[in-house]
Length: 556
Ligand SMILES: C[S@@+](CC[C@H](N)C(=O)[O-])C[C@H]1O[C@@H](n2cnc3c(N)ncnc32)[C@H](O)[C@@H]1O
Image (cartoon, rainbow, N blue to C red; front, side):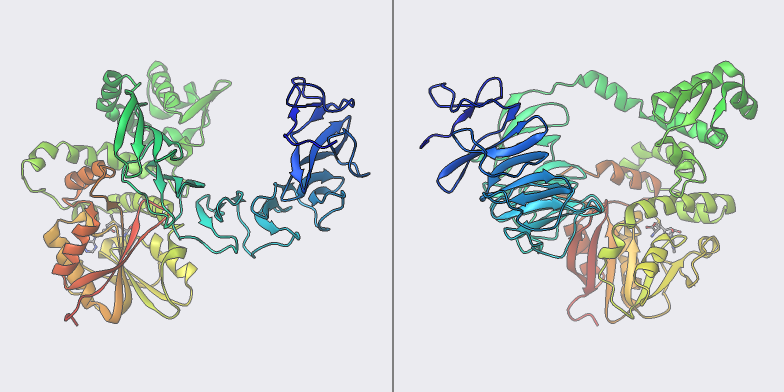
């Protein structure tokens, strides 16, 4: 029978019908899927009992083989599940290749996705050969010559059909391109990116749809629905915010309830006692049980503990408050609940122009117990934020690297381990270095001359602690410590001119250290005043970006 229009699936899903509603054939199956055209004929996958196969428009099997499952023909090939795994067949039912997979997708643009027995994904060509050597945590179909791949660290980027990267920008989540733009999720939220991987506007959303004839629908964090154009301008609002802004503001104002509940639990060593009953906790806190119950219920509301029988147990989130966690935040809980909370109270005066009274770093350095605790806090953040960043640093074999004001050496340790043929030196104040296990150390004051000559000086979250005058002085010392073609690597959050993201961190620095978060143009200005210039800025899969500085012209 010659069928011009694509037959459709009957309402019961057990056979196909023609456009006028009449059954296409007399056979009945347990399940049928859609017809696809292969050459001039239509072919559809069906299942009868435990056997799956493909039929033609007369309802007859097109080959003798039977499978556990089979799917539609795309690019004249169909994915099937046989005795020993997933693979692809041609129209005659013959396997395209001998390899078997844990999963096989449909061919799109003559390439398909498969997953091997290690759970790794990659693409095959139409003769069943891998199209590149890389293996991915996940990958999607090609569309318009570009596919999304997810690396082992969970971040995604775009690749071309030969496996090379379309750009080297990585996102928390990513889509293929529709009309030239792809939906991409950054740490701050969703946006649209161009083929260079750059966001085409600065706003970030809770969700975005692909562009449809130049316009896309987006949802903001407060639930408003907007239509934006391709430059990010809001063309119209479809719906106002859905959240209760009175309740939201109230909740913002009592943010310190959380700070203080967490602080109290760490101060009373609660997490070190768990799992424990209320009686045991009351004993260890020297408190009456009714009050301990109230504290534990507060911690449970925050998702940090839960009740199992009559014992309170640490949740996965709460485990970061245990001192033996390798990224413990127990010290941070104390810092945020004590000194830093006090410092925030000076914010009105600081906004009015008052200068910060005490240098937090000298205060920390002068108190042996606080050095340990404060630097355990910094080490946890460093471990969390730098682990993924280190492999992306452009450090060459044999280079001498100084991690200036590197704390107790978490970043220096990660760099030395990843670049064993470089020589990494850790610089910081004496009392801080005394707490470090890192073997190559240099006592260093950011505001006096530094000894040595280095290929790379790293300033990781250092400049943001200082106002412009001090930051320029630090940069000048770093420049003098460089050898002739040396470079300074600044690792810091980059504020965007057009976005408020990071603004609360910036206020925190004003209150805590007298420093500030900066935009790229602010770094450019500081660098120039220190006789340096920005060579390159790289966004990294972290809160920090990499800003590489080199000596400016006429500034040997
Ligand atoms: C925010 S921490 C950053 C530490 C580390 N670079 C990191 O990213 O985890 C700032 C560091 O600057 C150091 N520091 C502060 N004032 C200093 C000074 N005058 N000389 C040398 N180091 C100083 C502190 O001891 C601390 O280790």
